[in-house]
Each structure stands twice: as C-alpha cells, then as structure tokens.
Image (cartoon, rainbow, N blue to C red; front, side, top):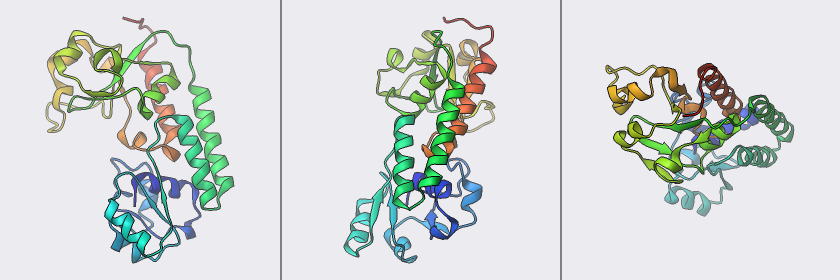
Length: 251
C-alpha cells in the first residue's frame, strides 16, 4: 500500500511472494520498477483492496491513511511500515530490514552491494561546487533529504541552506537569479515553454544564469524512494555532474 514498499518488494521478493502492489506501482513517472510492476495486480489503495488479496503481510507507508491501517490491524493483518529514507545509509539499512522481514536476506545483500558499489564509484573530491534541486513550482530539497545525500555522494554541496534554509521549501525565482548555485538539479532537463507544467524552469531570467549547460537531470522516479533505484540514481547524478563540470570552477 505504498510506492516505496512496491519498489522494495519488486527488488527483493520472489515473484510468488507478491500478492499485489499499490495503485502507483506502474506509474512510470514515480515508480522506478514500473515495467516489472505491470506483471502483478497493482490496484491496492485502501484497506478493502488489501483485504481482497488476504495477504500474510501488508506493507504501508507514511501516506497510507491511518483509517486503513487501523482497519487492517483490527482484522489481524500483520503490518510493517516502510518509512521514507533521508540518506543512502538509511536506505541500506531499510533494504536489509525488509529483506529479512520477507526471508530474502541474500537478495538484500546483493542489492546493498550494488548501492555501495555505485557510491564508491561516484565518489569524487569536493571542489566547492554547489547545486540546488529545484522544481517547476519553485520548491527545493532540504539538507536532510535523500536528494541532498546523493549530492554529497558525488561531491556537490547543497546550496539550499544559503538560499532558503536547511529545511528547504519555496525559493522565489528572483532570489535564485540573484544568487545562483553552480548547478541546478531538475527532474527533466528538456523542458520548453510549450510544456504546461514547466513553470519557472523555462523563465528567460533563469536561462541566463543557469542555462541547460548548468543543469543536471535527475528523474523523479529515481529519488522518490531508496532501494532498487539508488544505484541508478547515484550513477545518473554522477554522470550528469561529470558531463557539465570539465571546465567549470566554483563561483
């Protein structure tokens, strides 16, 4: 009953263990393993839906309604909550815990090895370059988020504390243009004025100070959760950073 539980089950469980997934599991914009999810029922969004599969275990998340959790508990269904991870290390611990919970310890070990290997390969010296994760609505990622930890993993400093505060939040375009970081991290780098949801990311003033050559693309489906998407998230951000930094120096 949770998008991140979906990813962990798809990445760790034996096929026979998966009774059903959440209604978001096959949404390619947020689900890293959307293609794999299509092979399973993916229509669970409330207690009734979960009960219809009579599972041995129900995985819920922070956005699962309290009423649904209470109803399942009253009926005696075992429940495990899949929290949102804020660092790569937390994600590694979560993989290990979920793998043990479903009796797939070796699959957990193998996924952890992939995550650790990707982080080791991506590590580069901190040369003082800064980045900011920025959405079309002007929202930023705080310093205590998985995106911020991905930045640290590849040697980038999060500019959010300087511009907004460590918790992140809304950053007006004027403030960003007046004091830009070295790079902008965006979910899509190919936005144009024709994109209805592009928002301020296509504003001419932003293009002047942070043109496409200073933007790193990190698709949302890689950062919604930890787990199976993490090796790819680390690799993508690292490769994007390498692509745009050969001749740049800190501002």
